[in-house]
Image 1 (cartoon, helix red, strand yellow):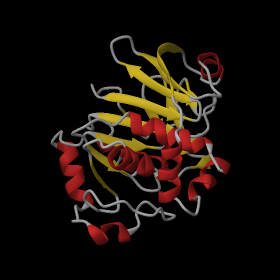
Image 2: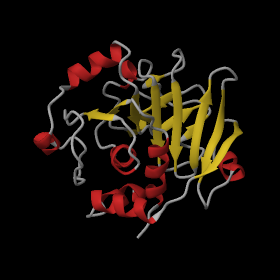
Image 3: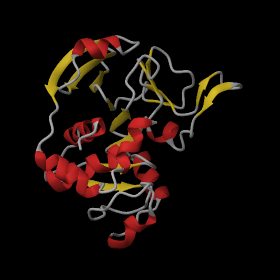
Image 4: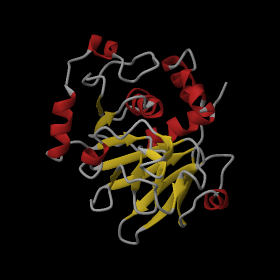
Amino acid sequence: MTYTIDYVIKAISTLLRDGELVYIGLNSIPALIGSFMARDLYGKKIRIIGVAEAQNPQKVILSPSTGNPFFVESSPVIITADSFDLAQKGKLDVMFLGPAQIDEETNVNLSVIGNYDKPNTRLPGGAATAFILPLVKKAILWNLKHNKRSLVKKVDFITGTAKFSNNLVYVVTNLGILRYDRESKKWYVDGIYPWSSYDKIVENTEFGVEKGKMELISLEERDLKFINDMDPYQLRSALENQ
C-alpha cells in the first residue's frame, strides 16, 4: 500500500546533499525515513544524528518514537547537548521540524493555536526550536496538512524563526516542496506530486507562492520497498489521520 506520506519521505530525501550532518528531532517519522533513504538507498554521504543520541546509526526498524534509545545499540553516542553545541558553532547542516503553522516570513508555530493565554489548542511545544532554527544551515519543515490554516500569512505564536538568519528553508507538505528565497522574500514551488499542481498549492496557501523548479516527485518500486522495510508495521499511516 502507498501512502501520501511516502511521497513526502521521498521529497525529503531529495533535499539532502553529500557531506551534510543531519539532525532528526522527536517523533519526526518522515524525516527519519527520508534521511535513511538518502543515505542507504541513494548513497548520499550524510551523517545522521538526533534526539535518540545515536551517531550515524545503522538502518533501524521504525518504532513509535524516533527517540527510541535502542537506536544506539549499534552506534556511538552523541548526547543532545553536544548536538546543540555543533549548531552553535555552525557545524549542523540540516534540522527537521514539523510545525503546525508556517508563515510567509519563515516563522513557525509549535506552541498554541489561537490566543496564547486562552488557546483553542495547545501544541507539544518547540523544545530547542528557537535556538537551533536560525543557526542550522538548512531547515526542512514538514507538514502533512497543506491548507490555509497551516501555511498562514502570520502564525498565531512564534515558537521560532529563520527570519533573521541567512540559512536555507524548505517546506515539504502533502502537496509539494516550497523553498524560501531570501533575496525576493518569496516562496517558490520546487516540487509537486502526481495529484498536486502549482494552482492547487496556491489555492491552499494563505501567503503568495511563485513557480520554481516544479519538479515531479515520483515513487519507484525500490523506494516503496525501502520505506516498508523500515516501517513494517506501517506506523507512518497514523500521521495521515491526525
